[in-house]
Length: 169
Image 1: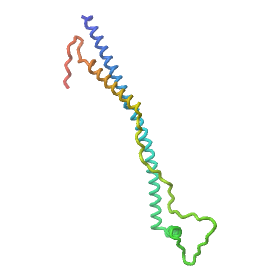
Image 2: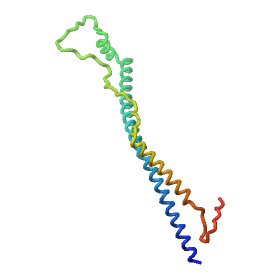
Image 3: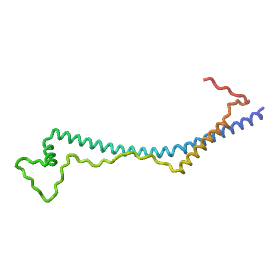
Image 4: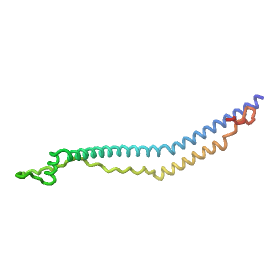
């Protein structure tokens, strides 16, 4: 009796090993197809996020400088006088403008550097060779998984070859 059960057990183990080898191969191929493009896109998005944060910080700084300038225009008479003298060529009665040989720097109430334009980078495009390889690997993955489930996924049998009923949930 033991001799008739042992070859069936051995053959069932071979089927189980073959099933898991094919399933693992299919999943590995699927990972090879999906992970590298996702990682490239993730790196591009991370770089865009860093650039957006830098632009956002520069805009915050510019906003704060303009708010301080607005506050000074509302409350500081000396600042108002300096702006009027620079922008509107204002002079008090009795003052004379003396021109010197050096060019006078114009008065700028708020000095802000240029803020770079921001637009997200386009997604990295895969070349035709990468696309064909990706599709080929994806098809191979699907075939391996289909073969594993169609040919080697057998119903559970006890050691006497009888079908084991599903357990009630």
